[in-house]
Image (tube, rainbow, N blue to C red):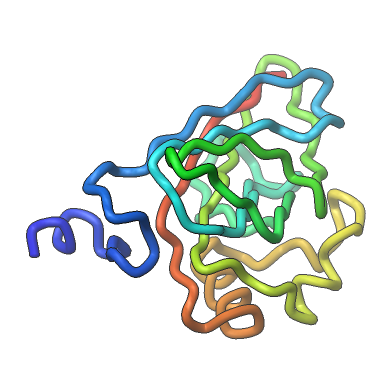
Length: 166
């Protein structure tokens, strides 16, 4: 009960039988045209990784809404039995180049069981960084779309957020 209060998306069904909270490590890659590398510890089930961030036109000096731009996708990641896995965003990866002297925030969301690519997401994948099809207005709306079209039984079980610097 306590775990469900602290982490509402936590369940034995979507995780290994351990009480270890998933942890993430993001590997620096430059130039930003190459996919960000992510290592996840503490998961033993297959999952999908979805990369989100802010749009190019959002003013960073003002309060911003939740992210909601789809920048990367890896359909199925298979962790080893010890719960460690490293992956790149093979299916799709594109992020806006950070402005010199400023930072940009991104999050890799982990969904288990894995998602299928629905028609709305399929339109966004492979498009340019500023394509309106990549804009879902918020991570919550993107979550609803990909779960409705890809797998309604899938749950977001972790998020690995990081900054890139210009």
